[in-house]
Amino acid sequence: MSASDQNDHPAPAGLGERALALWSGTVEGLELEPGELVLLESACRLVDQVDAMQAALEEQGPVVRGSRGQPAASPLLREIRAHDLAVTRILRTLMAAMPEEEDGKRLSPSDRGRKAALARWHGGRAYTAPAPLDDYRRAFKGSA
Image (tube, one colour):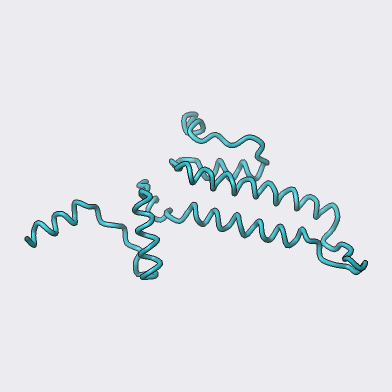
């Protein structure tokens, strides 16, 4: 990664080791939009929270005392699971347009929305790249 790529999307301050690796691995070679950067930062902050909860869980153990002194599962287990799910959903949202980007071509927000709508209404058979506007113009000129 060149120095100019690193300056385009510098990592937010205060990220832990795993979150920093997630940030750098995601922004490397991509031009992310401001909304995508906000989502990525949220995912990185959640990864840091998971790491902190995991450290606390290792310190206190997975079983704690319940309200009546009975053994109970630590509430951190549930929180870690929820945070992991949130990170997964955010990353899935960020990477939704990746198949078309393999060619080095980034879809516009409009094209991504069109692709999502087609997938929602037509399922797996709708995964075709949107045709450029010039193709539609040529098709209508020939039929007129």
